[in-house]
Figure 1 (cartoon, one colour):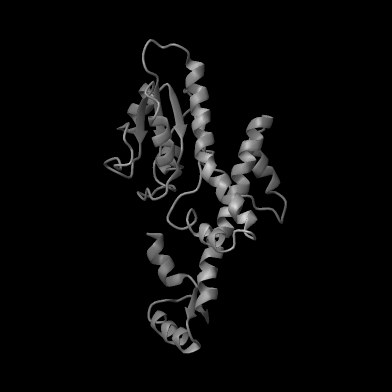
Figure 2 (tube, rainbow, N blue to C red):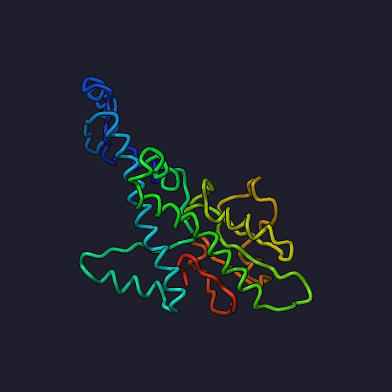
Length: 249
C-alpha cells in the first residue's frame, strides 16, 4: 500500500520539453499531490529518477560487498554494520541476497549505457549486486556438501521469493535467480517458501511451493533470502544448517 501513499505525499520532479510543458504537467499533478512539485527540463528529470535508484544501488552494493569481505575474514557483518553506524555520519545499509525490483536493478544500466567510460562506480555496483545471488548459491552448495551421504537427495529450503519483504512482487528478484540456480542441481530436492504467492512463476522449472512449517521440518539446509515478517517471527535456533542472507537471525 505504500505506492498509493507515496503517490500523494512524495515530492515530484516535473520535466517538460519546454518550461510551459513543465508548468502544464505540474498543474495536473497539483490535483492530487501534496508534496512539492519542482519543475525542470525533461532530460534532468529523467536523470533524477535514474540517479535516485543508482544512489540506492551503490549504497546497497557497499553493504553487499562488506558481507563478502566479512565472510572471508570471519567477521559478523551485522555486528560490524551496527557498530560502524554508531558514528554520527555513517549509515550503512543492511546486505541482502542481491537487488531486485523494476527500478533499482534496472535504472543504473541506463546511465552505464549512455556513459560507459565515466559510470565506473555505477557499473561496479551493478556487478556487485548482480553477483550476490551467485555467492549465496555457493554458500548453499557448501552447506549441502558438508552433509555427506544421506542415502537420499538432500532437501534445500529457500525462504522468500519476492524482491523485498512482505510483498508479492517477484520482478527481478535475486531470490528467483537463486532458486533457478539451485534447481539446476539434480542432486537436491528444492522446497520453496513464499507466503505472499499461491503459485510459482513459470521461470522456476524445479521446486515445490510449500508452507514454512513443512519446509523447516523436512529441510536439511535452509536459506533465508527475504526478510518477510513470518520469517522474523520464526525461531531458527533448533536448525543446524541455516544460511541467513538478510540478517534475521
